[in-house]
Length: 295
Image (cartoon, rainbow, N blue to C red; front, top):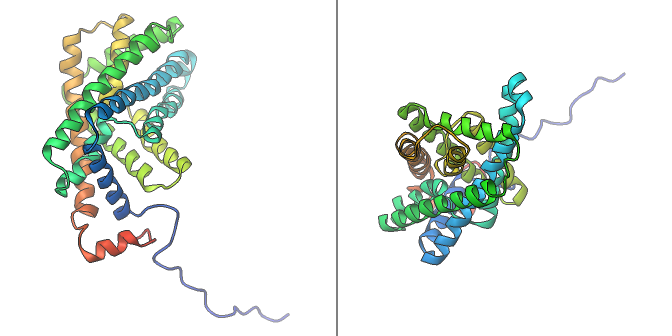
């Protein structure tokens, strides 16, 4: 039998590989354009989109609450699996927000920073977007909690109601610094979810990217200030031993500040520094206009 001899040397794998996704420079460029578009929204559009954002994120949180609250036996025998299952349904709210192009304050904490640092929008534009989206996300969350959860008896079993009250108390009765750091971790991952969604070009990939990051922050026990506007009030309505003042001081303030740090600094500032601060130079323009992903 003749000895096998390869026919020539293998072709080396090129450094630049074309795949169906935006590279990091393109992604930050698209996020910058999104921030500019958000700054140009009318007051009415910004308010309505923010209401929808609060409602959608709360629907995901309510889904999470029902799955976890109803899995009494699983939480006792295999709590890690129960957390994974409930965390896997929470991202549906983020998916609805991205697909419908609604406004979510926590994702805006990252997105708006990039064009502001590029001097394409003003501090006023950023502040207007953050404040309005935060306030009306809150309104949307309370609407969902009051009318679509409590009034409709969505938590229909005693186990679910007890879990809601216990969960609300645990979110509030936590050290201030712990809630702050949980807020940092949460919105760092929310920023990554938006980055993944922007990087991918078709719907299924966008949703899958969102699911990876958001499920991660849920399983890790991090805290999202807008989701808490559903999870804590509904727990209070079902008897959580927590006052509104303590909720504001011990949860709303530290989690919101942590979300700002995680999204705006660890997300927006870092990605601006890496991929957005030199967007006008020729090398960056060539890479943004190319089809490569390794720029």
